[in-house]
Length: 356
Figure 1 (tube, rainbow, N blue to C red):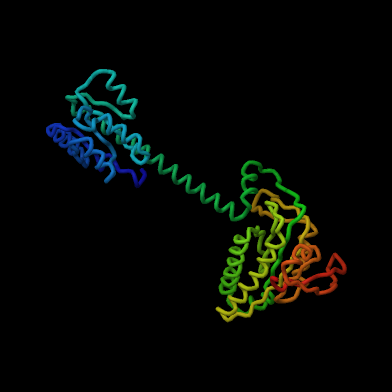
Figure 2: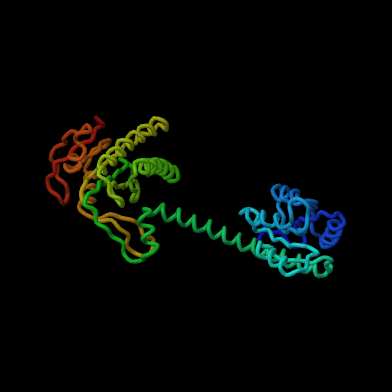
């Protein structure tokens, strides 16, 4: 049984009738079943009570001065927070039209006056059992929705939203080519030495703090984090949604990453340095495999960005010629000169020093 759904014996009943003797009679018979009973002498009192406290069942007379039982029933069924409460209409009117009207308005059941105690007990218990089952169903539904939302958040923490939506509808390989994107690799200089001289949990905690800061920066600049490998961080601009300012967004993040490391060094007494490499050009992005899949990038642009980082300078941001071309009018960029890049030969590279 759902913990939030009361058992029949502990249910709370609202009895609405303008005749005191009827109210008291119903109250006594319901209380013998161990039910908690609240009395209302008018339709207005009933409406006020349902707004103030929770009830598992309402027994409502039809013919009352002022607000009739019909109106109380209509009010309950039109309120999204109250419509789940079952209502049993009680009246001396025994014509079919009256019963039909009550059922059409949403009543759970109908009892004629004078009612038989055994019939009253059976109808009340049946209504309470139905409500208990409905409450249980709703609890399961909410739990299912909560689990679904949790799964959605987990999926979106791994994959871009557009890719996640596509993957949910198509389990085949997902791959897409992008004519232009900018890829950034960052690495913590001398991380291996740090790892060998400190407790592992301390190093992992430090790395988590650094990468969490980078994650916030990626979100701020609308970039897509691809992955972390050890102490390396990879992020891309211009995918899965194309944007013309992909290089600028990546450059801004690179500068903010350096500033974040400087701030961390100051606050924690560390001496960390980043080596950052950026390359721009065409890439292929997608998801492959069926287990522990990730959104990944492939292509010469990716390999070149990795080389820019690996053969860069500590504390510096190294760019390719194509990336420099995108940034030259807005940033302080100086030539580093021609360097030998593995698999590429001699390449002209540049250093991004700041904003103009």
